[in-house]
Amino acid sequence: MGARGNISVTANVAPAMVAELCQLALAGETQEALALDSKLAPVNAALFLESNPIPVKWALARMGRIGEGLRLPMTALDAQYHSQVEAALIGAGIL
Image (tube, rainbow, N blue to C red; front, side):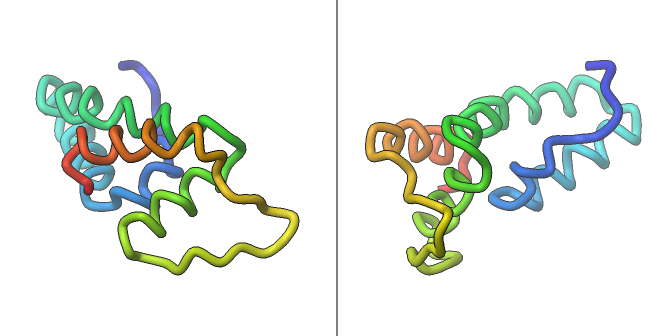
């Protein structure tokens, strides 16, 4: 898509997929990279529904990768966003 780099926030919840996306892009496999980028696009958006890293911490806890405890000043992900983040993770095959 013309950029150089990636959304490393997403790499916290989908490291293998982001690594594959980078490898495809670097190898010039444009169509495959775009297809994977499209699959991850809802996750990218969902992880910024609130300030970083709030959605990431919620997603990682939902995935069973971390516990649910938080330290101030961080707050929990607003319940209104739970279904959106979960749906994005499911849609990308992460959950």
